[in-house]
Image 1 (tube, rainbow, N blue to C red):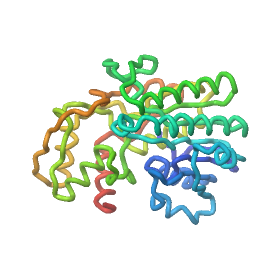
Image 2: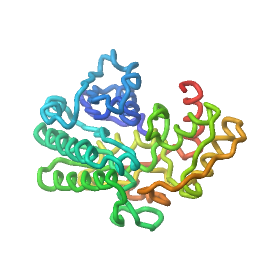
Image 3: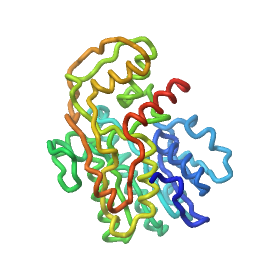
Length: 324
């Protein structure tokens, strides 16, 4: 269980894209703690330098302020790398509905640049972030790989295209690519200040500031919220997965769901606050319900998440109390 006892070759080198972001910085920390060399790349458009400040002087960490849309930058970063954990992307369904073109440029072109650089440099594994948004308008629960619906946003479309590129690079170029469909990841270092902040840090910030939370729609939409530790486990185990996992995409979640109303009530309880939320219009592009079937990841990646929602939520709340 977990990832703390995983073993790689002593001289293994990991490249983490989006290294100064929420998920990327947590991966940097985890890999350094395991004792391996890490190269981080980030253009700092979304990522924050303070997320990796404590690692900057680490003897096993090199940081490149660079852009994955620049192929030459990707090529230089990948030289000598064994494993790539590709997290760099633009997130946010609502933003993609407003600015679709920048999503193609960042998420599709940036990813294909990284895959090509990985192929040229004979990288052992290319593990990349996909998303539960690829299930689109599918109403089937739990969500199961191979039963996707029609995507509902430009963001979701870019993730779906990334999966197709990965399958092609695996089958045509023998680059072992593994996609991880994240389900609503949360935890330490997730930015509460962005205009497009995820629901948990956004609600925490609003409540701590004494303001009223706005909930889109009736609040009964549900999500399979996934604590960051489970995502770290999935990335590292994917690096060690057998060739039968290559070219595939996997649900990464815990396998339980909570409504937005439940999340809000639990948050008020944790902060000892009694304040009603305001319900506003639904957002276009949002999925109504999300719940993952994680059996494929359990079988082929040996993914066995330790952190259920409530234990991860309690730890995340403590982190925000100390850092917000």
